[in-house]
Length: 130
Image: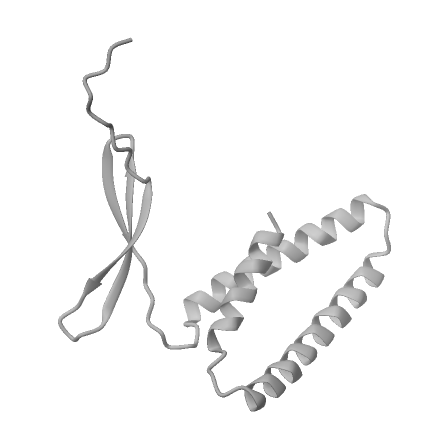
């Protein structure tokens, strides 16, 4: 098979890019190239270190659906539903208290901001549910 000597450069399907804004800050976006078409998905990063009401509602919905699926599985497995509810409530409360205590201890010892760590943990939890 003959070649014409030219190398074909394959494009990466997704690249994270930045754009300088008028106020000096940067906006992040995904440059997506699929099937010869390019599209952009702008990431709404506001660096506020807090979540909005709509973000909290979507997170609550996702966690509620996860709990409902666990309850459905418990019912199918002939497990006591009150026992599952109590165990789940206890595990959630212990996790919240432990995470709060650990975060407080770490923030006192380290001089850096750990506000990003909660987001990383949420992303890891989301991938663990796949």
